Amino acid sequence: MGNCGSTNTVDQLLGHTKGPAEPVTDRDLARARSSAYIVHGNFHELAQMCDNISTTGTVIVEQGADETDVENEVYRRVHNYVSSLYSYNEQIRSILNKRLNQHIRKGQFLPARDDKAAPDYARRGTFLWGLRNDFQHGDYWCLKVKYEGTQDGSDCYQLYFQKQDFEATPKGDLDSAGDYLAHAPDEDQRYPLPYIGDFHRNLFSEFENAFEEWCSKNRA
Amino acid sequence: MALKDIPTVDELAETTGQSKEQLLKDREAAAKMSSDSEDE
Image 1 (spheres, each protein chain N blue to C red):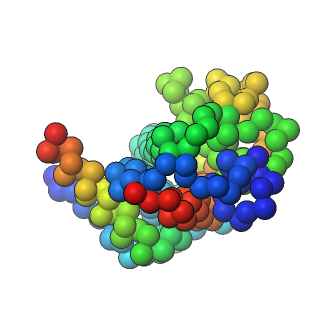
Image 2 (image 1 turned 45 degrees about the horizontal axis):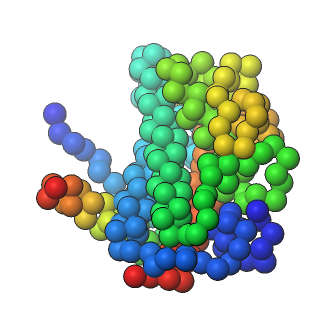
């Protein structure tokens, strides 16, 4: 994966520049785009609660809000984002499998820990896939929302990732829960909101554009 | 109760970093998918 001489992330993911073997239909594109729109909407909800999601990721709340309510709302929004991202990736994988003469495994979106050639979209996305998988166990123990003080009449909170409580089930090309964490530094993963901010604004939007470009090589 | 603060495409473009042109396509597709499911 990765080294195929193309700047297109979908080409890099597939390892070739041949494009779709079968024509991509309007229905395929509608599925991918509507799914992307849900991811964008869920990202917007996350960004709206922060002063700046890409830098500090500080959650700004009306002064005196109940801490449990704040915690639940932050988890709900993170859950919605990573779940919709998972659904989007599965939609894309399903379209690729329909329009290519090769089987695209989950592992191409979940690269093994030593696969440094995989595109950043897949590598950085692996941590978010892991969060979504961990949430499936029915708890959010790997996350912690902490009150950090009051400024300018608003309460400030930060969302932290707690590596020691992360228990995701390995999927794709991963062998252990720790493999979900292998593609990004601990310091980045410690703060999930700026991590998501950077991922979405740079890698997700770029991947969506790359998929559009890939589809345009062979349209029905 | 009312559904409030529904983001516009302009607002989504500002927060997500995606182009307005692409978001308009996505929005249209989302509407199409929901109307198709009503027809089924």
